[in-house]
Image (cartoon, rainbow, N blue to C red; front, top):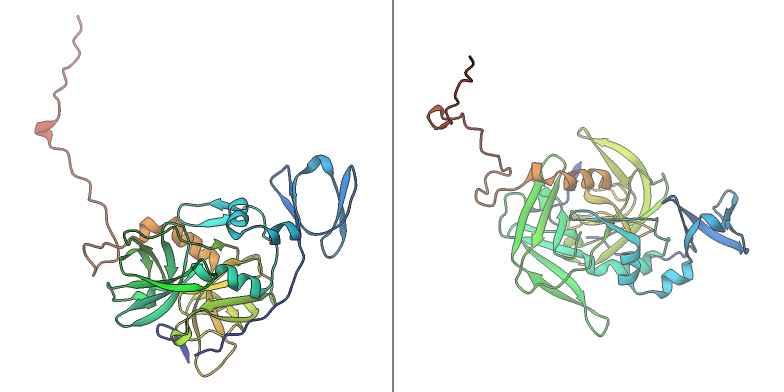
Length: 327
């Protein structure tokens, strides 16, 4: 039986695996990611896995080594690597791969718990001003929504803070997506995630999820991509062995570059290792066209806002034109 995970046990699995990666930014807006083998006065030799490339210095704009990335604060790394969209950001160049342990510590503040009178789910922050994604079925039929964010204190610990002024911005029942925004007075600038590409994933590639199964917040589970195009009820999903359980709904599925590649939303009941996530390309389409899915807060029964129909002109109010005369 397939079940959507609207309300919420999974044991968190923290795993580590270090991948050294250097990024060479080129003049043509492209980049090369690999391991630098040698740096010469006129060229750089980089190992990209299956071969080694010699890149002329004249074509290189910037070199970011794995050591440089690890030594910079998270805020600086994100600011250098991102290209902002309207309510979300994507990386200009592929971020270097890091361990699940490193990413779970860095991304923890951006993964939230979404609560309603009917249950709870997960979500993740897209922007500093409080836009976040969750599943439609997490908030379906609800208007009283609160979000719990885990802010990092000066002591380095995460402290839970609830936000109760949460507005539904847009939602799509058929893709099981909802866009919310935190609008509490005095809310700080939030940590947020970058959206990646599910299309760029390879079968067998490692991924990890962060969420709140059964309310156990910040639970991390790791697995691989089983398939990128599992058809379920007419829609295509990422299938993953990362443990997905009730309460993970709406939470992020990350690649090892720390980018969101999917939104976890369902699993096969009574079986483990059969979880599903909405591909990030569908999430970006939903966000780019969010006006088409806009929620009407004045009419909670209607999830869409329609424009006023065009009015026929009133002939009595039209200016009277004079016929041109000749002679």
